[in-house]
Image (cartoon, rainbow, N blue to C red; front, side, top):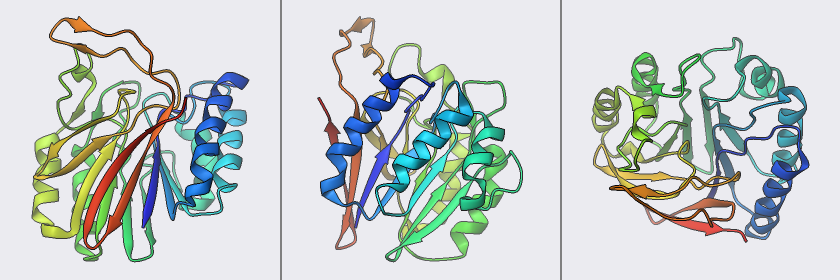
Length: 242
């Protein structure tokens, strides 16, 4: 099972943002992923046109895909573009569920209206109920990170109620293999709730890496994660597309 993760496309009506997406998808096509997840911030302007352009490109891959909103997405326009596919009947919450080849995806809409941070709190009861429905191996994805990144200035916009989210995941036993997110525009790997936790690189321009007052130049090209599940084990690969 190969699951491709895109994040932070930030389509805005310009060709530049879609060109970066096309470059990433051009790399991805020969891998023939079994599924694609997009962990938020699909668009930031010209929403109707941007969502249609992103949807056309995702559908051209010929595999199931699942999306959740990020803090700059427009919920109403996103539901208009994708609502029929994901059975979204209101603008909030835009959670998604899916199963592909005995593997389950749960996408959490942890966005908070008008804010850059997220909040898992209002989603925890729903998540616990969904996790209890099946013992299929599960990947949870969302936009804002529930773990500290250590990047100067970025953790103020974390996903709140991370402890509650961790408790729900831990209560699910071995069902949840990993949690992954986007939001900070940098790839990273850590542990959360005792499990594999990742952040995908961005399709749009990366953020500068600032740690302990030290920082790098921005040189990162667009990228993605490939999650490979085999033999009960999940391995995540970073791919940067120059």
